[in-house]
Each structure stands twice: as C-alpha cells, then as structure tokens.
Length: 284
Ligand code: SAH
Image (cartoon, rainbow, N blue to C red; front, side, top):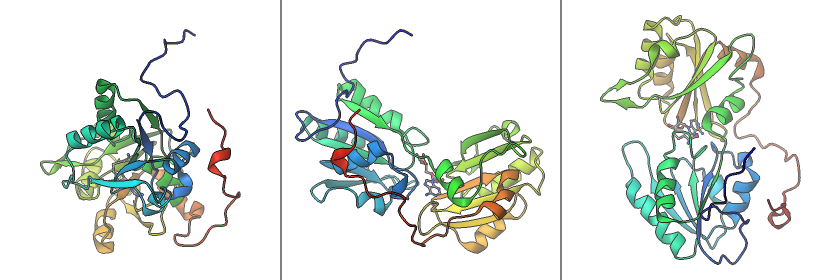
C-alpha cells in the first residue's frame, strides 16, 4: 500500500510539556461516564492548557482537567448556541496561535452529529495543527449501559444512526429505509419529535408492537430508561417527564434488555485496574 506524503499540519509527536507551539485536540468525551474515555483522550485532557466544552460533556470528565486549565463553555443546547459556530472556530485558531494546547471536548464522538468536521475545516484552512481523538458515541455507550445489544443475530442484521431533529415541526427522514425488518434504529436528538417518529415508522410499515426504548443521560448515575412499543412509548415518556439528552432505540433487540440489563445507576462499581499514571502511558 502506498503511503501518503507527510502532511506538515499533522501532529506527529505526542504532546509534551512545555508546548513549543499550540495545537488543537478535538477530543471525543464519550457519553458521560469518564471511564469510557480513550487513553489518548484521558492523557490529553490532563495536559490541557485550555478546554472548550459544550453541555454534553459530563462534569466527571471536566473534573479530570488540571486545576490550571482554563475552561470555556461554548454551549450548544438545542436552539441555544451560546457561541456561534464561527466564533468557536476562530477562538480555537487564536488560542492555538498563542501557543496553547487546546482541548476541544465534544460529547460522544466528534464526528457523529457533532459538527467536528466544521471546526477542523477552519483549523485546516488556517494551518493550525490539529488531531482528532474518537470517542464512544452515545449510541454505543447508551446501548451497552441499557443492556440493549444493537445487533443480535436472531433479531437484527443492521443498525442505523439518524438525527430526529425537527425541521419546521417535522422530521426529515428516509422513512422507507428506516422502516425495515431486522434493523435497529438509533435516534439522536429525538425527544421532541418522538410522537412523529413513532407515527412515521408505523405509517411506513413497522408493527405498532415493535419494541422501543428511550434512555436519558445514559452511562451516568442519572441514567433513566423508559421502554414500550412504537404505540406506547410517546405517552410513557410524557408521563415520565424525561428531559434531554435522550437517545431512542427502536427494534426487536430492545426486548433483550429484560435479560441483559446490568447497570445500576448511582451504584459504585469496583475499579478493574489501578489508575494508570499518565506519564507512564506509552507514547505513540
Ligand atoms: N457527538 C455526539 C452526539 C451529539 S448530538 C455523540 O457521538 O454521542 C446530541 C445528542 O446525542 C443528544 O440529543 C442525544 O440524543 C445524544 N446523547 C448524547 N449523550 C447522551 C447520553 N449520555 N444519553 C442519551 N443521549 C445522549
């Protein structure tokens, strides 16, 4: 296989103090539980000079930042963008040019419904060194902690991730592609549109009895799960007064939760290994 020529903008060396020149690390912070960070994310967080984060990044992850790191909240709750995207992009450029090691923390994975591409587009255009650290996306973290295997060969052979964000009050989805048998559907940002989602899937051929679940603040001590069917879920969610962030999972695999549910929110879990000292992690 032919290797591509080296790119001057790539960050080839592992970060070490003090930084000669700044860089931006677009880091996936996972769905909430700090134990789900990658080692790379954990190490970079501990070496950050500045961290920009939005509302999905859990407090437990922010607590891993050094006391000396500057924390900048850049918002991004639905329809309430504290800082417009363009200003975030420019801030990243400015801070890196000041020589700072900038950690841009994004909930889940930066490239899944996270606008990570837009942020690094600006960095790339401006010649600022950057690196992307993948994170556990909400679908994977939440499904595991809710005891729902997204594919299980007896029930599902495909899984699709979609956004249920409402545009002008309706959901712009490829309904025939979604309403297929033996497929699991994971919907991000779908709480407001849940009634429309369930109605649309039934209208396009899924049985009203198809199992469905919604998980609020998955992987955290606040996790709540409501299950039902396409017919019953919307009412149950209204009764339970769930609030974002929530993730919706539709498909026969949801039934497996009855047997596979293992996570007890709020209950202390014993650590499986002693904490790794950051300095002794192998360099790449
Ligand atoms: N980049 C993120 C997704 C950003 S979109 C990722 O990869 O996970 C924001 C949506 O993600 C929320 O509206 C919600 O649907 C989902 N989400 C993120 N964290 C979640 C959590 N802990 N529990 C439930 N849903 C979550």
